[in-house]
Amino acid sequence: MILITHYVSCDRMLVNHVFGPFVNKDSKILILGSIPSVKSREYGFYYMHPQNRFWKIMSDLFEEEMPNTILDKKKFLKKHYIALWDVLDSCEIKGSSDVSIKNPKVNDIKNIIKETSIKQIFVTGKKALELYNKYCYDDVLIVAIYLPSTSGANCAISYENLRKKYEIIINYLKN
Image (cartoon, rainbow, N blue to C red):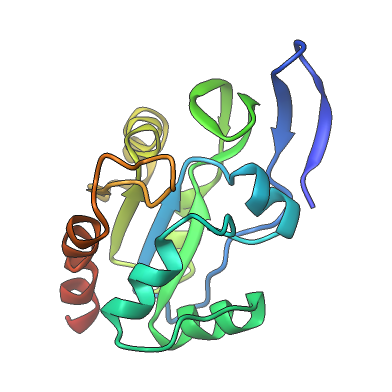
């Protein structure tokens, strides 16, 4: 699903985000990652690596069965007024390593905000927060709330602690 323009070195490639945001006019919150992982790029949707804990956390927060198919995930997001996208439209990257990101080009988040009911932005991971603050905040003017990455590579935080951090989402959706 991802277009690989070319390798810029033996282990770094230029990737373009070819699947767009998941959003609808009723979305109340926007959750931003940096750029999709290799598995998410392969499947064409967000948080698709089997070890990523995003969908498990979200289903636990809403006390629902975990959505398995992309269609089920989209229905889940729409039902709960959640939009998903990424800060970056393209970048040079090694695999899925956010710390390796170079030459970022950002998405037009401001236009998504204008066309929806989104009042709050959350970012998943330190790199997404850094990129949002550096490249997007001045246009969007919504302070992003940091959430730890749900990636399986972020094993420093337990599932229970990760879930507690994500509970803030419920508070913003209730208002």
